[in-house]
Every structure is written in C-alpha cells, then in structure tokens.
Length: 579
Image (tube, rainbow, N blue to C red; front, side):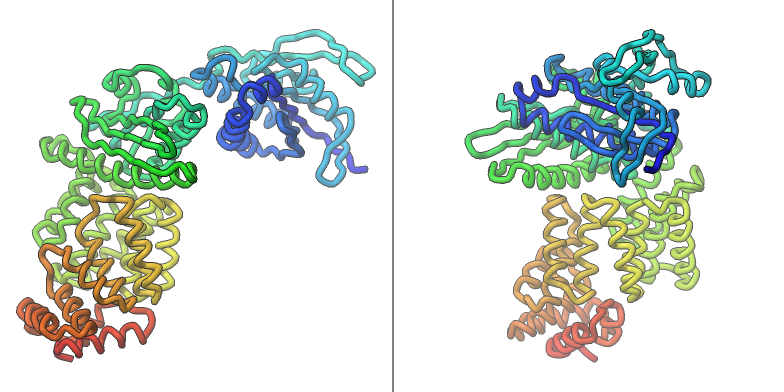
C-alpha cells in the first residue's frame, strides 16, 4: 500500500433527489453548467485532481490543505452569486467537507479514514457551507483570512471517536462584488457592452435553458473580440426575469451598449429577436429576427449565436465610428484613433490609406504597448506596399515586418495579429506560415467574419477552392453587411474551382471593378466560350493598365500548385491578354 499525506475535499449536492423529481432535465443541465463554469475551473485553478464523481457529488484530492480550502471557498462563493437570481426551490447548492490526513492510494482511487472523515464532514456542513477538521483548521489558522467557527466534538458514522469540527464563515463579505463599472467612451476604456438574459416568451421550460444558453454563448463569443469590453454572465444575469430600464442597466455597469432579446416557440419553429441599443441616446442601433426549425435546437443555437455575434460586433464598431466622427480629435482615445484607422483602411484608396496611417500612429503615440494597434499599423502600411502607394517599398516592408513582430511579442493571443500575419505570409507565397497564423486566428476568434473569409481565401490559393467557397459563404452568412470585397474572394474561389459562371456572377457584385477584376472576368468569360464578353473585359483591363501582362499579373497571385497557376495563365491568354 502507498500512503500519502493529502487534503481531501468531499462535495455533495443538497436536495438532489427533490430537484430531479421537480425538473430532471433542467437540473442535469444546470448541474452540468455549474461543473463546466464554476466547479471544474476552481479545481484546476487550485491544482486539485478529481478522484471520483457521482451523480450529485465528487471527491477531490489536493497536495495541500490551503489549496483544498481555497477551492471550497471559491466554489461556494460563486455558487452563492449564481443562485442570487434563481428561485429558492430551484437553487443548486453544495455541502463541502475538507480533511487533511494520511491516505491510502490505490491506482486512481484513494481510501482510508482520511477520506471517510472528509465525507462525514461534508454531511455536517450547512447547505452552501464548508466544514473542516481540526487538522485543516490548525494548518490554516494563520495562512488564510478566514473565520473558523468551532462546532465542538461531533460523532461520525463508522468513525470510532468523535472529532472536532469547524465551520468556515461564508458571509456576504466573501461574495465577490459586481465588477466596477467599465469606463465610458472618452474616459479611456474600450467599447463596452452588456448582454441581458434573453427572455423566454413561450412559457416552455425547455426554451428557458435555450434562452439562457443563447445569452451565455453570445457573451462568450463577444468576449473574444479585443475591441469590446463585455460584462460577465454572472453580472448581467442578476436582471434575469426582471423588467429593466436599459439606461439604468447601462449606468449600473458603465457600458455604452446593451443587447436584449427574446425567444419564442411557435409550433415547430423558434423565433429569436435581438436588438442593440445605444444606452446614451436610448436609440436602437440594430435589430434582427431569426426564424429556425426546432429539429436541432442546439445546432440552431450555434448558428444564430455566430450570426448575431458577427453582425453585432460590426454594428457596435459602426456605431462607435459615428460617435468618433462627431467627437473632437483632441478628445479621442487610442482605441478611437485605431477604430478610425480601421474604417479608413477598409476604403482601400490612397488618400484613405494615408489618413489611416496618421490615425494609427496617433493611437500608438498614446499607448506604445497597444499590440492591436501595432498589428493594424502593419496591415495599413502593408496595404500601401501591396498597391505601391509608398515612396520606398523596402522601407515600407521593413515597417510591416517590425510592426507585426512587435504586435506578436506584445500579445500572441490577439486574433487580428495572426490574421494579418497570415495575409502577409500568403501574399509572399509563404503558405506554411500563412496556414499556421490562419489556424491560430481562427482558433482564437472563430466568429470574426474577416478571419472566416480569409480562411476561404487561403484555401483557394492552397488548391482547395471548393472548401474555400464554403468558408467565404459562411463569412457572408456571419455578416450580412459584409464588405464588397467578399464578392471578390468568392469570384476568385469559383474561378479556381473551374466554376466560371458562378465566378462571373460573383464579380458582378463589384460596383467599381479594377483591372484585376476585369482580368478575372475576361478569363472566366473565355473559359465559358463567350468571346464577346471576354473581349469587352480584355479592353477594360488594358484601358485601366496599358502595361498589363499575364506574367506580371500571375506573379501577384499566390497559387501554391503550379497547375492552378497554369490554368489561370491559359484562361488569360485565351481571353487575348498579352503574355
């Protein structure tokens, strides 16, 4: 037998059978959520290991009594906060017992009196409370700022001697307070938003969990955007089931925007409404309704969440941009300068690029360690390099490399840093580097339509245009108000997939086609056997650039496979463009 001195935490759910009888599916769903969001993270944070679980309890081992008690306190604190907006009869609460003693270790199990005492202590704990042995209390008396209430010696089942028991006082002072209000625009903080619990309008308990899950998914997904300060779920859910005044909520949390919505089941369909409100003006910035079949409610939840988040983030940025444009330049924060730079960058003109560089440089002057701004400066200068808008291409390229390197060193978890590095790598024909950074960007922020559309672009050049089409279409669904250039990505993907008619249709969405769009259209028309259309676009290509050549143009396209580049070359020559 292997023996070890170890702290054991035993936890058991209060009233499990009653709650299961009252609402079996709901209880299991909430218990699973609590495990994933509260309990397991607390155990991992304090270096615990789950030895075994039952339907309503668990046994966890720790290397020290300090870790075990800190874990128990954190679980009970957070459970108290979670229960603050739940009806008393539906609250999930735990009793927790902690003991420090000599334990027998057998493979993955632990046995002995030390374990049995922890289990008996758990029974003696109050609902939502913690009971510890004298060994634990003596070990922690001067290590943690906790109050131990002596309960005297208590008899314990199957333990030959009574043992002294202590309760840890868990009063209101131990419950974490609500987060401090986020700074409002102009006060030095990022754009801030609170997502209120979606209202269940159907009266169906199943929809209650769906509505809560949808709200939590939106909060989680929005939290991935570095430009948004998102109030946590624990804070916003205190308003669940309550009539609220949006401006009062915004004031309480110190946010600029509030999202609210509802879920209603109608026959075999679910209707979800969502709206974004500018709390300062009480003006609806954006509203949308989603109707879906109820065949797979959770797949639908994922789809709707992705759509809402992509559109919502864009609408928040657009609304913030309007506010920036109305504000005096001298009052802008670093974030607002960067936001203005992004908007200018997306216009893709020489004048806009020049102004964008000025804006991003002002942002960095205010905050030299702003990783996101360094990344975007690299992107904006990279645009000037790509379109030859810079007086010295070598200097511009060195600036791009330096800025992206700085951004990566400051924050390796900024999805935009990896997105921009992927784009630059791809344009240089460095496909492996592009793949790495694109995968990192997608993993960090799978709801960003710019990252999703770039995944489609990468796959197009990597020789998988059919997959690329799916990703580009997904980006368009994520953001129905997507930039016009998404049609350019889609047209090129269709062309590479030899779907010429679809490519032509995509390019027709471009309001002001440039020489490259006309070259693609000429090549696609030639491949469909339409010489008249091919000739028209050939002339327009040369009218925009009389020095256009097939060789020079193909050198700008990062095809990975030689056969794809050759296919494009043959199509351009068939259209009559000069080699």
